[in-house]
Each structure stands twice: as structure tokens, then as C-alpha cells.
Image (cartoon, rainbow, N blue to C red):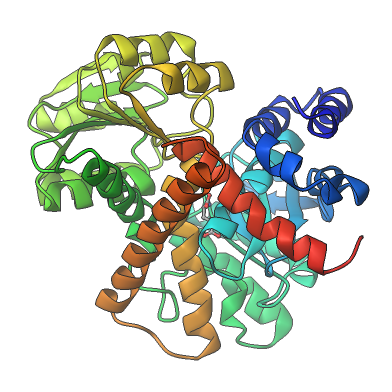
Length: 448
Ligand code: GLU
């Protein structure tokens, strides 16, 4: 491996051994960059890679809130403003008990390259809190969000840093966060947050990640001379992203046959295709119970407690739940089932050894999450554009632009891999294309 590249990876490993998810994503992205670094010796002189793995700014803050029973609780809030070379920091907020700096930094690092791939002016950022929304009342969620924003509002803004949702943060939370921001600032700066569910949010934003993933998948299928109609898809999770995939897949004549949760997975051979079933996903999520078994109880399908859906024989696997869902054991099952399309959707859903194994399977096509799920943040950037011009675009307009962006991301990835003689390698292509745009902007702006 190129000596400079290897030394930066070694440095990250030794400095951040206590942040394994961050180390994992740096290794994953950098493992594709060797030919680029070889071609650009000037990067080493200004330590471009060493600067890229260090956030421009990252901070924690105290979030104190009162539960309904009158007791007070304290959580840790985070914001990582990782790289602002191509635009205001942009990325979601994750509320989940396992949030710690390693998770925030891995998500922030991924976000740099994902946002770059969209071709839009958005830098990379991420934030969140080690707060568990499960079972919390609406009033508790509101008080938590208000307290979170009281600490954060000074450090964000429509041209500075624009948070959005991620796991545990949806339109309701964004609404409460925005309300508090507006109250504190005394101004209607609606571009400060995206994923707003009220009047100045973007149409199609809730669907965008799932729809975008399916648009990307269609490009892959087309490359293989296949069509999406009639295909069976295994998904994980039952959040907003999986919901969007179910909807678009059903509309195009394919069917999602598995959903999963922390309690296990469901198998619905008829597919999550009817409006009733698709709408029930939203209901299950909103209930705050976090149990996918509810779907099996309601529709009388199989429920497999404590298991993951990756042993089910399908045409396409779309891991859409969370990081490191697919380990070597599941990857081997997927390969043994003869699955041809492994389309990552959640941020880093595959461990690095499992990803390498899947990419080596003859005939299997692997697409990386930072490209496949970029439709969400791309539509957030479209929401920022609408907010800046104080207009709301039609559903058709947003969907048309989203579709176009996904096609371009796919094509840019294909071209970047080909340009460096790597063949049809969507993983390396996305890493290289995402990296190049940020690298060019950093080189142009001087060393800091
Ligand atoms: N959390 C989403 C992601 O991982 C969306 C971020 C955004 O819209 O800013 O890309």
C-alpha cells in the first residue's frame, strides 16, 4: 500500500483505538484511494489525508431535561463539524443510547463523501445524543429537544451547519428543535434544519432515502440487463428508510419480504406491498414500542425472534437498519443463497471483512451505502435551496431532481472506478468520486 496512506491509517488506528467504528470507516474509504494518492503526490506535502481524518470542530454539551414524573435527567449532546470545504456542515442527529464519539465521528466521516457525491454544496457533519427515545412521552421528547437546542443553537445556522434527522429523530423532533431555535434567535431562519414536517419542509423528504435507494438499484439492474419487476427484496429495520423502499418497490412491481427490529425479523412472502401494510410501518414506528413482531401479529406472517433476515432466499439484499448489521456469518449466508445484488442502505451496515468477502463473490454486485442512501441528504439540500428562495417545489419537481441526482451518483461512481482501471467497482468508485471533489476544494482553499 502507498506509504503515506498506510501511515495515516496506522495513525488513526493508534490514536482512536477506542473508536472502532470510526477506524473502520476510515479504513474502508482509504482502502479505495491508493491509485488516487499515487497519482497526486502533492497531497502528502500538505498532509491532506491527515487533515481529512481530523474534524474541523467537535464538541459535546450537557442536555438536562425533566421526565413526566418530575425527575431530572442529564444526557450528552454531540455535534461534529467534520469538513466544511464544499459547503455548510450537513448531516443528521441520532438519538440512541449507544451514541458516543466513535459513532458520531464514523457517521460524520461517511457524510463528507456521501454529501460530496450528491454534487450539491454541503459539507459533512453529524450529531446526536446518548438519549433513548423508546417509551418516552411526547412531552418528554419535546423537553429533551428544547434543551438540546438551547445548547446547540449558537453553533449552527443556514450557512454554518444544518442538522437533520437520523435514527431516533424524525419530523416531530425536527419540529420541536426548530421551534426552540426560532424562539432563541427571534428569526425565521428555516434553512437551519432539514426534514421539517410543517409548511417549509420539502415534499418527498420523508420518502427520499428509500426512493433514492431504489432509483440507484434500478441503475444497477439496468447495467445487468434486468428489471425490478417481480424481484424479491430483503430489508432490515422498519424505520423511515425501509418504509420508503417498500413504497417505491411496490409501485415498481417488486416486493420487500422481510423487515427486522431489535426483537427479530418478519417474513411476509406476499410482500409489504399494500397501502395497509406500508402505512402500518409508520404506525409501528410511531408507537415507540420498537417491536417488529407487531407486524407479524397484525398480518399473520412468520416472526423469527432474535434472528436477522439475511438467511432468507431473495433476489436482492438491502440492509437498511444500522451499522455492522451484516457480519461474516450473514455474508456467507447471503452468498450461499446465491443473492446477486447486495445493496447497502444503512450507514456502514457491513463489517469490513464481510464487505470484502461479498465483493469477492463472483457475479455478486455490491453497492455502497454512501452512494445508495445519499438521496436523503440530497433532498435535504433541495430543502435548503427551497428555503433560501422562500418557495416550495411540487412533489414532481423534487422527485425528478432526486431521481436525476441518484442517476448521476451511480454514473460518477462507475466512471471514477473505470478511470483508475478498477473495472465495475461501485464501492471504490463512490469512495474515489466522493473524495476527489472534497480534495480539490481543500487544495484550493489553502492549508489549515
Ligand atoms: N441522516 C441522514 C444521512 O445519514 C440524512 C442527513 C441529512 O438529511 O442531513 O444521510
